[in-house]
Image 1 (cartoon, rainbow, N blue to C red):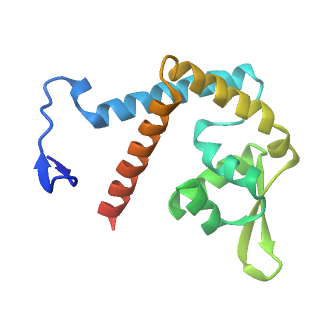
Image 2: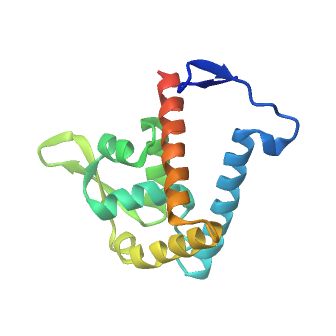
Length: 161
């Protein structure tokens, strides 16, 4: 059952085929886009970048030197996920950790020179992949999908609490 908050009742989605299931569709899209991004990163010679890194990279390109908790919040990731992701990104030469000069117990995350230099290539791949997957879909429709997905994500996050 899916609760229809607009009318205050539960809405049952009949699922007779995998493509009738919203979870199936969301996960298939995520897998296909991730695979296309990986191919694009290899083609652009930025194979050290993984699709999972994008939230962190975009946040750090906007503001370098964030606290782990701030970075996780900005990237939409849990602290437990952040630790292993940052380990991988550090091993791939994209980020490094440094003690906060104001509080040495706090770690700040910075981009390496390599992490900064790849921004243009990475964003070009993302743009190309998204242009391909949203081919024939208007900007208005893409905005509607993004808004709906934000609401779904907010609902999912609320249910976890």
